[in-house]
Image 1 (cartoon, rainbow, N blue to C red):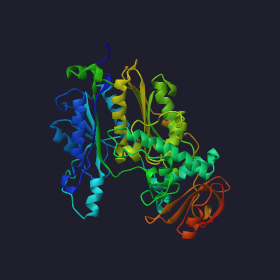
Image 2: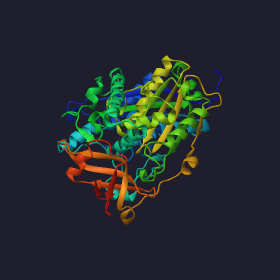
Image 3: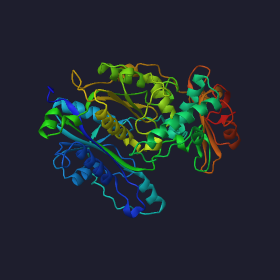
Image 4: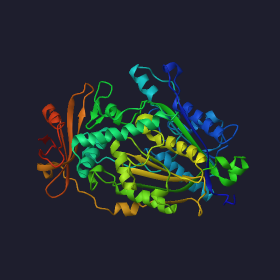
Length: 494
């Protein structure tokens, strides 16, 4: 194969999960990542981890090492390498692949080990048992190189009202999508049950999935003690599952290095093209909750850079923290999620949602499948925040004709309309509900109603109520489009 020696290529992938019986046999994140990297090295046909010049770790939410790459490199016996960590966000694994491909093509990196892992199940178990973990931390002045930029995604007013958790905001997207599509509550619930049942069946066939029990649509949607309602309309099974100890790894290098290392060309999978971009920073300023223009522009640009159309893509993995994310991604990319298989793993609820690192598992899975389906194309969409930050990657065993290509359509996105936010007296009075959710207590009681509303002049205004009667009332029927009243402190009255 006659290729530019600086062409970036994925040569090895690995996934690892550990079901500890207790804290005594639990593994820290660096140990999980070490095992994933060793799996990736074996996958590449190597005797052990390569002498990489860069070790790049996905930002860890649970145990804060300060410099996780240092501990991973030490476990792998890699010396003198750049030690790097991604900025936070579920987009970061694909962003790291994009950035590493650019660095390899430019000649600044030759061999890179990418890894991510979380031991969040163990971390939370230790907190519940009041046990102090003796896992290491780097010195205060031992900082890794940071790849990517951290985005401030919460408007101060959102934080003031306590509206900042994904479990609050993604259900609001869902109610807006339901209303935009003109479905009633029961019809839409049945649709979500089918969507997530399909996802569980994919996980059931994935040996690297945390939960491998196929669920029926009725099991997905029926509220029980084990499937309690969290944020209307999402019971527990429709939420990302972060209660996992998992890791994944991707080894990338130049074609020149792959040949020097003696890696069989049958293992090579090429990144064809990628894009990175984000929506308007704050949910408060999104033009609508039922559309994601950054996914539309980022996805279409990635496909265009690779000379492809979405119908040319055989293997797809859409980020799946909540059903609304899948639907927003699918419609933005021109995919019917009931006609095409849109997950290769079983997604964050069933394969497992190790916080920022899930897309590394998606990439590893698609790379493995592409080797068996030579010449076909795989697409990964990785998402961070509140459907905020987006990274796209296209992969194939066929190399890109013009080399790896990457762009960001951010200037076009920034120029799109923004909705103004009304606060205090400007928001007080009669408004209409644009999107909403009701947050439930752990005992299963409706606790807090949250609304995004439109004022008469088209601005957005947030509302919330901790009145049990209001919260219970908003669990019945459709509330999008209903007139409500806000006080100047954002208290909601229905």
